[in-house]
Structures are given as structure tokens and as C-alpha cells.
Amino acid sequence: MAVPLLCLCSFSLSPTPYTTPSIFHSFNPSTTFLRFKLHSTLFHSTIPMSQGDKMTPYEEALEALSSLITRRTRVGDVNLEERFNVLFEYVKMLDLEEAISNMKIIHVAGTKGKGSTCTFTESILRNCGFRTGLFTSPHLIDIRERFRLDGLEISEEKFLAYFWWCYDRLKEKTDDKVPMPPFFHFLALLAFKIFSAEQVDVSIMEVGLGGKYDATNVVQAPVVCGITSLGYDHMEILGNTLGEIAGEKAGIFKHRIPAFTVPQPDEAMHVLKEKASRLNVPLQVVNPVDAKLLNGSTLGLEGEHQYTNAGLAVALCSMWLKMTGHLQDTNLEQTQHTLPEPFIKGLATASLQGRAQIVPDQHVNNEASNELVFFLDGAHSPESMEACARWFTLAIKGQDQTSFHQKLDNSKFSTGMVKMNIGERDHKKSTQILLFNCMSVRDPQLLLPQLMKTCADHGVYFRKALFVPALSMYHKVGSHALTPTDTNINLSWQLTLQRVWESLMQGNKGKSTDAASEELKDDMGMSANNFEHSAVFPSLPVAIKWLRDRVQQNQSTRFQVLVTGSIHLVGDVLKLIKK
Image 1 (cartoon, rainbow, N blue to C red):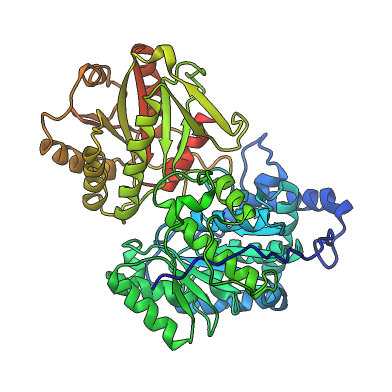
Image 2 (image 1 turned 90 degrees about the vertical axis):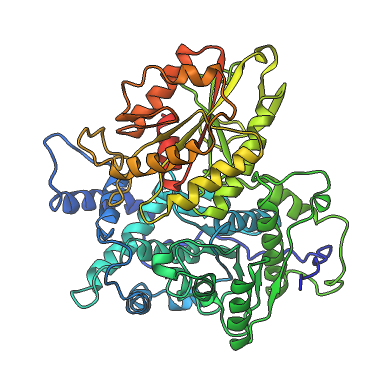
């Protein structure tokens, strides 16, 4: 049964007064530089460096963080339950038990839309006047994206101070029996330290993987929990059925703590309700936000599926306000013609990189031409691939009209809402290119057909699909986590993806070809393996160069590049095109 919209007309907005805390019990900000110098000396003594190399304090921290990344596969022989239980030892080492128990936490798990739901939730409560902390994953460009205070990624200075405080204390107290925590466990612990020390009013914690054994699940008493849309993903860890996956996600449910979810497949919903019943969790199902309730505004995140995520965010915020005493209990069951203004503003101004994001390539573009535009979405499951394809088809049709409004991220070359005028360039042809990679644990036989079919159903056909290997080192974080071009790189997985694509194209012969596709067949000397409808490139920078060269050689063609299949690929593209 769908939960009725809560009436939020009576706010009691009295956030906890914020006073700048002492970051650590014995931390003196004036000694920060001296502390970094000390770490530079100690840390460099353990890292082989070429002559003349010198890392910044931030790079030193990232190097230390990289040492926590395990190189084994995510499945292997790892006992997830044992590794999870050790987390409580780390919490004790960092003296975080009381701090975590006092935090007013919103905990969100799910397969699709976790990051978007958490982003909407943070934006709403920030616009209600509260000091917010948001922990999400993964990051796209900088690790600090995972830790947001009042909507902004944590400053480098604060990150370094909190990082070394946690790292040093764990290094001192861990041993062979209880070794240093792995990468994501450390980041979750760091988030709890940051948010407690910064005295945020609300901490929004996105589950990294699953729920039951996720590092964020050391939270014993959140204010409210949310489960976003469920689907097939990480099956090698979470299970092969929707019921098994739902059971892992429901692991964040706590005794009598209210929880919300969105409409789910029957198998998944049955498990969620069963798990909730065992724990006396009042589980409610919320419907997508009705656009009419936005009073003429639009969601800050693009795509029809975002109305589902927004609906869940509204419910989570409403319950958080109620449970923390900031929302009067009168008229809660009444519906409204519009949402409260802070809710509307929060939903309309929310922003999240790498999800339905449109970025023109500054290397070749100017305001009037838009010759090369990247459409980025980190979809990596069949369901999210379908949603991505629907968004892409609508977005490019908007661009091909006389004008369209495009939302860019708040990076150095973005200014919020940018109007891209096509106008006199209306005679340009548009050609769609797919830039794709996915992890080898994913099934391209599920992802690529869904993408191709959904686009075709909306009259969009890719002229060329480009497959590239991963650029980021998965055992490295930081500015030099990008590998240089390696001519000996293993492209077997990309060749597999290409074969799947070519097979699909054989079944769609004769559909929507034009002169633009003929032009793209030429000059493929940079590719490792070129077919009529696809090409494998030895690296992402080479593929980007090929695209830019095509723009210069095809002045009458507008190139619209969909980048999807992996959030890591999206991040790597952003790093390259924003240089």
C-alpha cells in the first residue's frame, strides 16, 4: 500500500546551533603544517620514489589510503560476516561508539538510485536549515567527493587532519590479529569521525554494497532507513535471485526503526516485508513524486526514474523531521497541492556528477557550435541501462531542437544553467556514439541489448560503439591513479564486448543509416580492432583523441557521445575532458 504524502506545512526548524569544534581531543590547528611535514618524513621513508619526486601532503594521504586497497577479488575466500564484525573493534579503537550512537542518521540501501536518493535527501534537509553530512560512493574524480558537509565536498585541509587522526590511531592499535581495515571500511569509519566532529544535524549514509555486511551498517539506531529500487547486481556476492538480494539489502533494518521503500518486484517486496515483520519495522511503500507537487519546478537530477528516488527522499526527510522533533504531528495524513518550499527547492537544486550529466567538450566546443557533447551516466545494471537509454534519447532530441537548457556540474568551467543555442547551426547532422566499458563481473548480454533496444524504440541508433579498457587503477586513488597508455594492455574483455555488440547489430541491419555513419568508417588507424559498427581502442585517451579528430574533420556533424556501463569510466572521462 502506498503511503500518503505527509503534510509538511508546520515546521519547527531549530537545528542544533553549530559551533566550530576542536577537530580532535588534542588537536591544535596551528600544528597542522608541522604534522604534515612529520608525515612527509615518516611516510617517504617507506615508499620507493624516483629521484626528484616530491608528493604534496594530500598525495601522501592518498598513497597511504591506497595501501588499504586489497588486490584480491571481491568474492574470493573473504568471510564477509567475520570482516564485518571486526568493524566494531575499529569503532572502539577510534572511540566512536558514543559518537555514532548520538548521530541522527538516515541510512539508505538499494540497487539503483541510492546516490540520487541520498543527494535529494541531503539537499532537502539542507534547504530546511540543517547542517548536513553526506557519505556516498564511489567518487568520480576526487576521494573528497565521498564526504560532503552542507552540500560541499570536504576541504583538503580538513580531510588531511581527519584522515591522519584516524589512520595514525588505527596504525598504532592494529596488529597481525586485527590488521588495518580495508579501503571502504576505513572510508566509512572516516565518515563517522568527520560527521561527529563537525557536529552535523543529520548524517545521510549511503550503503556501499549490499547492506547486512556493509561497513555503514555499524549504525545500530538510525532515525530512518530507506531501500531504493532493487535489481540484479553484484550477484556474485549478494545472491542470484531478487529475493536473496532483497534479504541482503534489508540487513540495514533495525528493531522498530521506521523504513521506507519504493514499488518493488513481487519477489523482492515479499522478502522486504518479511524481514521488516520479524524486526517490528514499520515498512511503508512510497510512490514517485507527482510533478504537480513541485509547483512548476523540475527535479535537479534528470530522468523519469528520478521521480521515484525523489518520492523516497521526501518520505525519508518527512520521517526524520518527525522523529527528531522538528515537525509538528498535526495534519500528517493530509495531502497537499504542493510540497513545502524547502522541499521543492531541495529537489530542484540537487546535483550529482555522473548521473544523467551533460558536458560539452571544452577542447573543441564553443557556445554556438556544440560539436562534441558527452552524455554521462554510470548505469551498470539492466534496469539502470534502460533508464539511461530513455534519458539519453530525450536529451539528444532536446539538443537537436532550436535550443535546450543543460545542467552542468559546479566545476571550474560550469556556471549552473547554460543555454546551448543551436540556432543558425540547425542544419548540422547529429550522430550518436557509444563509449562503453563495464566490469568483467557484469553480463554484457544483459546490458548491451537493453541499451540498444530502448534507444531503438525511441528512434535512436548508434553509428559507432567504442570499447575501451579501464583507465583508473583500482588499487590506487589520487591524481596519478590514471595509467599512461600501455600498448601491451590486455584487451580481451573489450573484444568480448565488441563481439556482443556486432552480433546485436547484425540483427538490426538496414536501420537508420546516413552519410554521417559513412564518414565515421574512415581513419580508424588508432583503433586496436575496427569493425563496421564498433571499434576497440587501447586506451581512453586515444578514444577521446579519435573523437576530437572526427569533430575537426566533420564540421557539418554534431557528435553526441553516450558514456555508460561503469561509473569508473564516467569519472575517467570527466578527468580527461576537464583538464
